[in-house]
Length: 252
Image 1 (cartoon, rainbow, N blue to C red):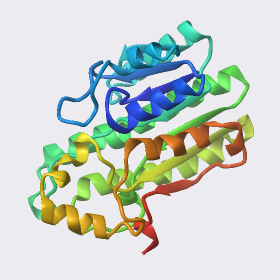
Image 2: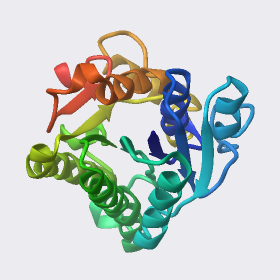
Image 3: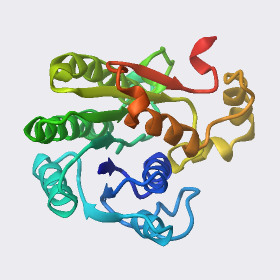
Image 4: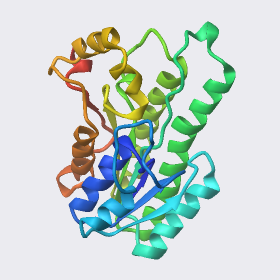
């Protein structure tokens, strides 16, 4: 059974759909059920889309900045499906990009609350449940290439993604004895609502595209493939890894 936060749209939706297609029961945790109208996702809410393909899924409202909400989401998942095997801490935000001297405190604080504290809550509560079950598990956090390399702007976002990478490395060492693996996926630029501005700014899109040697930007399904691998038995000896899924962005 897998819990995916931020499952309504984008990368979280793609991961939840992939897990459902692979036979996992999926709990879709988000602030809303419907896909983000500003994104590229069309059709049914994620849990309904999984069910329409004969998969098992449910939905729970969850604000990842609120520890009680996260605990309740995991409790609901366990009550419905009996256990928690995989937790994906995907929920995140990317607000306007500023130089630090112009960055509003409110934007910084909101970004830290969701991208860093939200991952902390999700990882902590998931690990507690998995330890109680006593049969191991998989924890996956969605970080970013912005947590691996420098960028001339967006201190708030970049700092939180760097924190996620270090959180994963530390937690992996702490819970390895329990048979729990903890890894991060670090996507490059992926076609989601978060990056929509790129697709509407041709000169900027061209510059960003040139930074990805593979010759294209990412799709949510590219990240979902990595999330499936890290949740699978094939990744049983993979832990503490910050895996770039970035079309070569961090290779040059």
